[in-house]
Amino acid sequence: MSHTERWRRFSDQGQMRRRDVLSLLGSNLALGTLYAESKLPETFQEWLRGDARTRKRALELSLQRIREMDSSIHAWVQIRPQPQTANGPLAGIPFGVKDIIETRGLATEYGSPIYKGRIGTDDAAIVQDLRRLGAILLGKTQTAAFAFQDPAPTRNPRNLEHTPGGSSSGSAAAIAAGMVPLALGTQTGGSILRPASFCGVTGFKASYGLLPITGVLPFAKSLDTLGFFTQTPADMLSLWEVLGHSIGEAEEFPLGVPDPMPEVAPEMKAAFQKAQSTLSEAGWALRPVNISSMLAELHAANRIVMYYEGAQFHQQRLAEFGDRLGRMATLVREGLQIPAARYDEAMRFVAESRVRITEMYKATPIILVPAATGPAPLGLSSTGDSSMNSPWTTLGTPAISIPMPVGKQLPLGLQLTADHNQDGRVIRTAVRVHQVLSS
Image (cartoon, rainbow, N blue to C red; front, side, top):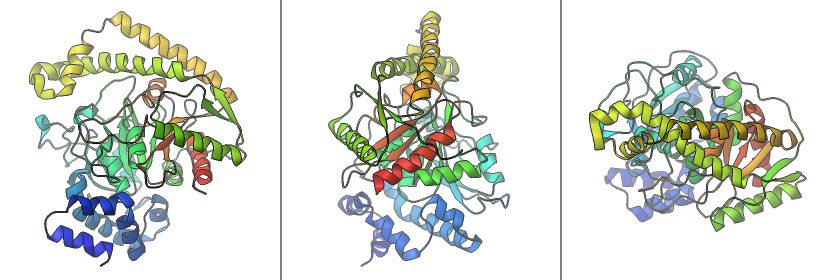
């Protein structure tokens, strides 16, 4: 029996036995076989190369895949394909949208039961941009409540017993499961890069302020940043170019690597060191950068800024809903206790760190760091540790997580960072690095 037939049989029975789902999803064989049998696009680049007929058939397959798999993965809040409104380069290509991003006529519930049934009245600016290029808004993906710490019901498609990360859990899982070739996420701490690492896909956080956040539920005004999920770094580069951003030219320069290493799990340390060795053997120049203590301090600063600004924005919600806000209620109460002087001090440290990191980027234009502290934790109660991501969010620099080769283990991501507004450089370098690591 083919994997496709097995999925249909499980779906017809109304439930999937966990060991069967894990054997299919964990090994990725089900997805690979589906694609092989259908001869339809898998990656965003393949969708781009497809003609109108191919894209239409691929959209039907995407919807079929969601019907058959999402009862176990729970990546989606709502599936309701919207009409195509333009005939641009993304015509007929579906995308998912994190549920803190406004969408006209679709659920926009912020991941909270308080707002269950809420319908958006306007498309966010980034959604409008994609639809103007012809992309089809397929539906809304799950998010942690208010993009904070209360987990969504989403499971990791690589192993259903593990978290997909947060808060952009649904978008990362939808990409990992092959449901869509493109999905939107947001990051205030580590909400794009960490789920990408956990789910074994590519996640990109743009430079702070580069992408429009009009229509995105605010959290912390100094940190909130938009980004995307795709299967591969090459997909992300194609997307970035289609969106009208510069991808620059090929460059040769040394890569920075942290010395000493940040504190990470043994699996991540081993994979990161192996990646360094592979790159060095391929001729890349690697130079040590002493950033680990600064990263730890920036992670602490991120918490102060996030809690202080988040409390200001959600204070009225706390007054109205109290503990119904879940973990956001705790953040607001704690954030309101942070003195303005402590917040100002944190912001001064961030400004000083930006000057310091800019100097480092002059010698090593790309700095490599782990994309998470380790593999996806077991269980769904925690979305994981953001300490490898929040420093770059706080600095406002672009960062991308790409999968490292790990065999049959849970996915681990390699994070590449660059100076502010060097988005094309960091994506382009990620493509080259990924080619070396995958060869």
